[in-house]
Image 1 (cartoon, rainbow, N blue to C red):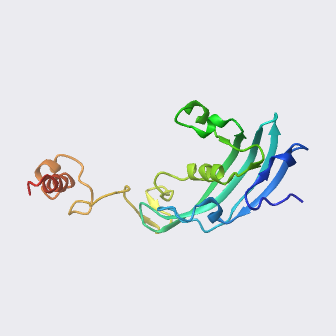
Image 2 (spheres, rainbow, N blue to C red):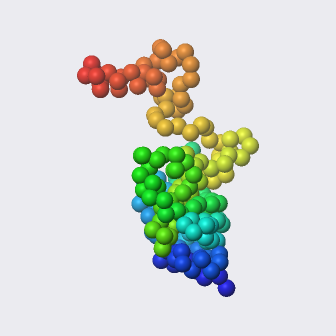
Image 3 (cartoon, rainbow, N blue to C red):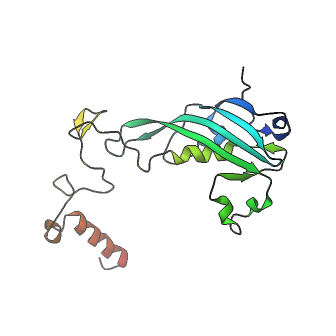
Length: 197
């Protein structure tokens, strides 16, 4: 049976006797995911992590992790559950230049982190891998004909502001004439901000 990775630390000395494989089943709080402003993380973070020494001063972690994030859909505002899966391939090294990313930005192009040579704390690295899997805008996958699978109804494009009075975004020349259009509303808003209205 594989050991469970708890407390989120890996002792480098144990890896000098050979690679170890860990089963991961942790609360999202361990990854500081509970304070995300857009996504909610209620499910455990699960996975399998293999840790091994490479040379005398590098710990390599490989494997995969997954969890579920919840967020309102940008189209229909219904709650979505998004399964996040990430491949793990990160290194921890004792090179102290890794502590200064401003002076040595080239060392931070790959997922490489500093550790003290004794204990690896992988939570931050794994958290970043999960966050990279989040979509820029959470939205359900539409069925043919722009049908929302949650509401089972046709939906329009994602909108991030007020629509025109007709209930749809203005799209062309009418913007120049219609002061109630989106462009007209933006002009009025700019005027208010500039103190003209």
